[in-house]
Amino acid sequence: MNQNIISEAAEVLRSKIGATKVLTDEFIRASYNHDISLYAYDYSIPGMIILPESVEDVQTIVEEANRLHIPVVAIGGNTFGNGNIESNQGIVVDFSKMNKILEIDESNMTFTVEGGANIHAVNETLHKMGYCYPTYPLCFGPITFGSEVSKNSGGEVGSMFGHVAKRVIGLEAVVGTGDVIVTGSSNTLKTSPNFIQSSLPDLTGVFISAEGAFGLITKVTMQMQVVPKYTAGADVKFEPTKEGFKAACEFVNELRNYKGLICNAHLLDCYSGWLDERFFTGSTDISAEVEEEALQRAGHIVLLEFEGYTSQEECDRKVTDALKIAESHSGVYTGTMMSDIFARAEHGDLKLTEIVYAGGFVGCMIMTNTPYEKMPELYAAWLKNVEELGLPKPYTSMIVAMGDDCCMPFYYPWHPRRELSEEAEWNATMEKWRELANRTYEDALETGSVPYAVSRKWKPYLLDKLDKGYLSYIQGVKKLFDPNNIFNPGVSVFEEAEHESN
Image (cartoon, rainbow, N blue to C red; front, side, top):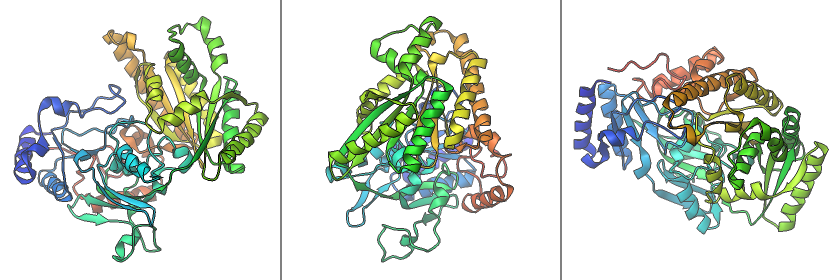
């Protein structure tokens, strides 16, 4: 991006929305060029960071970006791990100052917040009133509702309650023309409360999962629910083999989709279990001599969390019924240690985060939505790729959120902390990570998986797979809402051609 154009835009925006909202210091800009994948992807440094405080500020940003054809990327905390924050040296809009709770409607069980409202901060307020927003992420960083909707996140308890799409009632967004669009069909009738979708046509879904390609989300209305009174959990161990992994998937699929026992379910593969063990014991031995025995101890573990409103006995009965099903799949109850840690993490405890990052830095987190019956096949392909690339298995792991309609595996390659000083080794490992990501994307699509958010890394694999009619239609929507292609260019599949910057 031409620096003179950036300087001109910064000067204009300072005069229109305020100098303190426009940041051009190089150190600050550099801090916005990565997400939690840290150094796995090469990003350009943004030309400027803007912190709007109103819808009018956002409209002014879009107006100036259109005038000079400057790319615009919105962020909501940089807590994703798929390499989606490429700014093309343009404008990064940080919504953290648009963080107000605008309304909590107890009669209709909804709440309305600005797009930059922190999910966990809002949940703290709701909890004090006896309510909660259940589909929240585990990362206790500054993730926002605008980001949550743009990614259609599942969150830590997404496996119990589904993705964000099931919770969105309506939203407000500034589109690429500078216009403000208010969605949610009940919003079209001024006398109707924001509590339910009517039978009128609605554009809310266009913005869900779009990753900011169609507009900048400035306000959302979401469903809330009463905080459950009772909980119970269980850890169920399966053999640390491919057959054991398959049995674990079949167990949860039967549990949730055939027996109707709705729960929060996660599958930790045996390498995740070994990583947990090393955290608790302080062991650093990852030699081949100890690997087999360590994996046998760890096993593949399914973590179950049940919630209830009537009595503790209700939750305990669900656990008992689940363990009977697990036994028929050769699963063994081992206690509640890890399910308790996951449950506490959902309410602010950072022990799980501490365990996860004890392994080292995340190389490149890869996420897919995968059918239950295909999950074992994808896991086998993952292990094969790890082995062929010569990556150390003790520093790779998979955690699978197991939902009502599919599995959502999180693939974690790690880089051991002690090797960070070796630059050549670091760079070589990075290349292997990227190749692992590429292979995983290809394998995922071949097994019927779909992306968890589009992501710049998915794009090359998706373009050939998407239905041409759908692609043409969605590119038409993109052109309608963002005629100059200023929003998140080069990342989504929605534009007809790559962005050409000045």
